[in-house]
Image (cartoon, rainbow, N blue to C red; front, top):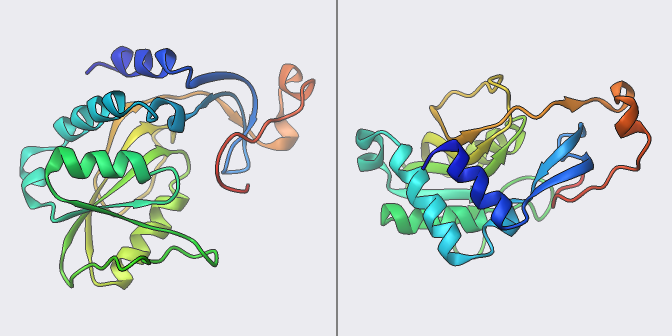
Length: 193
């Protein structure tokens, strides 16, 4: 699947939005990818997961024992990645502000984990979720995501495998261009900034 094929999936789902958006990172953007919309179709979610799994190096795919995703955004693509890789898929969540395993999920000591996200912008959620997996004794061997919005500035101690990389400009609240400053920001994501 090419980058244009991926963007076509987002466009077809009405998931590539334009306007003034406040991102989970606290930064502002004129573009927003609503992954929940692109993943609401099981067929589309499955196609994207198969394409993402195919981008992983073969030797890495062979080592994965389990997929772990951060809730909420990573739930669907994490589940579909588990299906594509034929391994269990679980998630971590933040009931008290810190990622943890719940719902009877467990990670065996030494289990090799693929962390799966929908969109990575700053990597904060990924780093926090990786820390939660390591606290349970698991070893995160890579991070995969549908969309990389880091602009190549992600610093992680594990390999990073995005399906597509996009570099929509983002702005601090005090650096907004006039066209964004003239309209109120919408917060479409699931996390508080």
